[in-house]
Length: 174
Figure 1: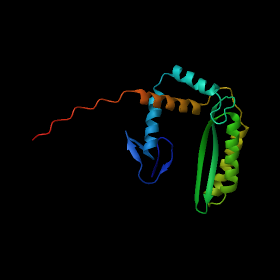
Figure 2: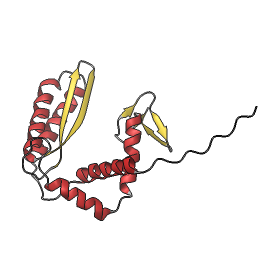
Figure 3: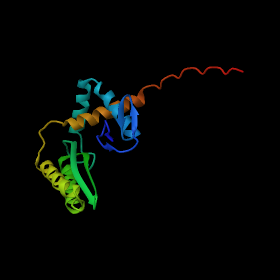
Figure 4: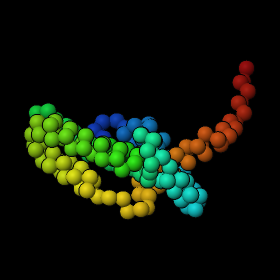
């Protein structure tokens, strides 16, 4: 049992291992690769793109920005099974509030029904949503937005880069 080196999900069985790292899925391994490539992009260029996204109209509702990553938190329980998660939304403050209220109601209704984790995690996720609702914008893009923009730029760069030239095939011996 271990944790995914990208999303930190617990890996019970299987997973994908590359370059000494372990991931829960192939898509997580690819996203981690893009994050590594994104870290090597010039900070000045990335900052320009981050501010462009931050000042842009909301992709959810089309309203005025600032646009940022706004997380909501959920917990779902059923007898001996409990699952909690974070749902990031790229959107304006209004769209973030809607997502956080949905997470709050979802957790209050469906979080309590598991033992023991449902009883323990429901108040945690409810409080996380309340703190997210009460916290305002500080006027600068978040680190989460920076990470998303870096990954997006890295994936665009990977799509534009020419494919590697394959080595010529060896002739078959007859």
